[in-house]
Image (cartoon, rainbow, N blue to C red; front, side):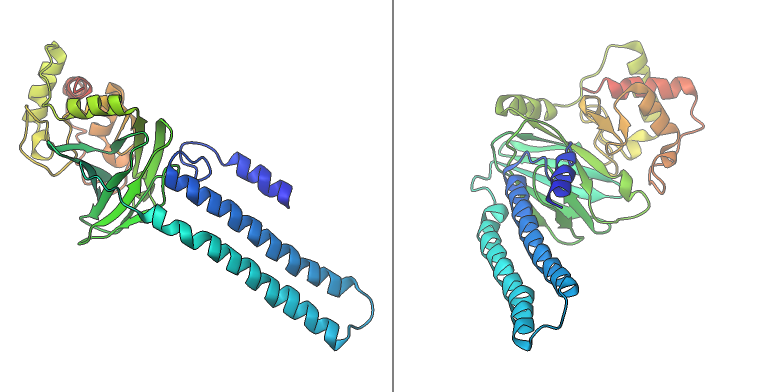
Length: 319
C-alpha cells in the first residue's frame, strides 16, 4: 500500500499539480497532505488488521478481548491519530491565510464566463490585463477575487490553495511564489458550459524582470509601421471590435471584453485555450463557439480571410 501511494504521488507532477509545490502556501499544504495521508494509512492498517485478525483467528473471543480490540483499535487509536493530525494542522492555518503587510502591490481578479479580468493595483496606478497573471518570486502578494456573473473558484495548485469568487463579495488570497516558471491556474467551481475552458497562466519572474514587465504593461499600445498590421488596426475598428475591446492608445471605447493592449505578449489566448499566434487569432475570431460553447463573443465567420489575417497581425504585434 505504501509503495503504491509513493508511486502514485511521484506521478503527480507538472504545472498544475498540488504536489509539485512552487509557493510557500502550496508547500505547507503539500506537507499537511503527506502527514494526513500517513495518519490515514495508520488508521486504515489498524482497522483492516483487526478485521483480518477477527476473521482468521479460530474459536470465539472472550468479551474482554473483544472490547479491548474494539475500544483500542476502533476508537482509541483513531481518536489519538486524528487528534494528533488536528494539533499538527491547525497551527499552520494562520500562516497560510496571512495577507502581506505591505500594500504597494495588489492584484484584483474578476471571474467572467469564461475568462479572467486582471488589474494590478500599484502605488503609481492601475494596470489592466487579462487571462494571465505575473508575479515576482519571493514576494507575498494579495490577490483580491470577485465575480460579476456566477460563482467561480480561483486555483493555482502549485502556488496556493483555492478561493471562491462570489458575486457581490470580494474574497482575498495571498500567494508567495518560491520558484520561477509558468504554472497553470483554473476555475475550480463549475460555472457553465465552458467551465473546463476557463484557465490561465501564472508566470513567476525575478523581481527586476517583473518590475520591467509591469512598467511596459502600463504603457499604451504602440502603432506598428507594418502595412498588414496597420490594415488590421483599421479593420479592427471597422468591424466593430472596439465595441467590446480596449486597446489603450488606439481604441478605448469599451471595457466589456478582455483588454487587448498588450495581447501579443501573452503566452496564450482565449483563457489559455489556444496558442498566441496569428493562425490561432484568426481561428478564434471566426468561430469562438467551436472552442468555447456558450461564449459571449460573436463569431465573425463572414469576415473576409484577408481582414481576419490583417486583424490577427495587428493583435500579434501588440507587444
